[in-house]
Image (cartoon, rainbow, N blue to C red; front, side, top):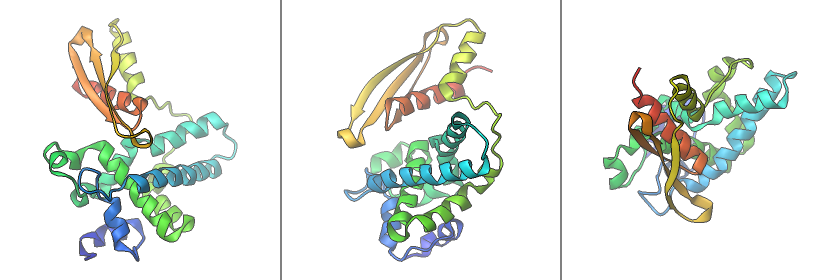
Length: 224
């Protein structure tokens, strides 16, 4: 039963006693009633704490603002999706038919959530020390590469600067859909760059995340 996860467990430096916890962490809400959203909620909090501590210890003289920026860069969805791809999580995810057809195995938001859910599952089973070991393993090279003076710009900022440099009007962001209950809402936002006749939609657990995802898609579609 554990065979499909042998490589993953080696990369995590952790072995589950209760394999069903790992299976739940890799189950999207579209596939089953018992899915990974609660574990993801927990994993998000644990990841933020462990990364905050690592950054705090690595840079003992830095002000709070720079520490916050570096932590945010490490735990943002784009970074987590890259970690998920390094772990080949897309191949292990359990998705519903609709998500399968729409490319859910490659979607950043689904992959990022799976990373957080796995961390939540490890925490549930073995506590903070075990999950901290896994987080440090997965993020070590990124933590070592941190540069407190690097100016990290998010997708919305990059898009705004691109348009301003060409004296074009700024994009419009509009919420087009909100699904789910209050504690587990999913926002869909449309970003429209009228001057270039380009529009893309993004989705996320908050309006801010959805806007960033939409801006990212616009950036990928921009002429060089």
